[in-house]
Amino acid sequence: MIDMRGKKIEAVAPEDVETDPRVNTRPVDRAWVNRKMREGYDRKRIGVPTVSARTDGTFVWLDGQNRGALSIAAGYGTEKIDMQVFRDLTVAQEAELFLGLNDNRRVAPIYKFLAEVTAGRKQAQEITRIAHQYGWSVSDAGGSASIGAVGALNSIYRSGPRPGATLERVLQVITEAWGHTPEAVNAHLITGLALVINDCPHLSFESLARKLKAANGGAASILGKGRGFRSATGCTVSQGVDQVIRSLYNSGRRAGRLATWGPPAPRSSLSSEQLTVGA
Image (tube, rainbow, N blue to C red):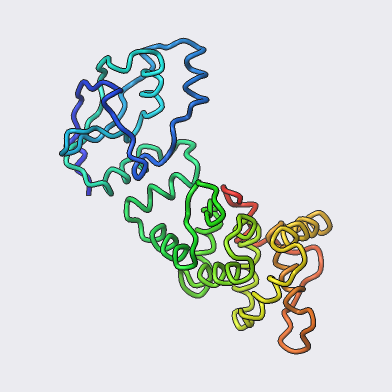
């Protein structure tokens, strides 16, 4: 629990405040800073940023990082301004404050998720653990083994027989099928695969991974065909992916075939169209 009575208004120079990316997970919005510079710097509109004073004497941004960057860009970085200062916080508490102070703002889901990990929130930490288990990282880095579709990850984590069970299966199958490629963790694709797994828990996951690996065009082709289903039937892309995956699994199989539906299909609560982050 954070003692909100421990905050004080103190004069701090913006240049003396640092960014800890574990806490303030967003990069500075340079486009916003440049736009405000063109409009003209107005000290009165800076307001009162919020920072954490650490025991080593450093300050870190909790709220107001962009305004601090604007002050520095305008040549006022050394001029002290009023800031709301918290002291004696842990890094996890700093992250919780960042989340609370930005709860009603347009912070990209990936940055909220990363702050949730730092804050010690169970679901975010469990998703991170599961991703690492299969060689993935949840980040905005955009590398081959990076997953940015946190909306899909959260939805899949909460689905299934127990929290995390379906997500483990999804990441296991896509990793065995395609390795670590950006196309494999597209939000629509992993959501569609989760729909299949939740509806058909007794399918052979080894066989499914083999069929997906052998599919011409790989993950990108399956996603494209899923989009084709949406155009033809009015279903969601993830539901289209669901049907493509079922058809691939059924190919050459006489027993244990998966049921398929005909158009139009009902929309699912796991639809990736409802997610805030794509792949």
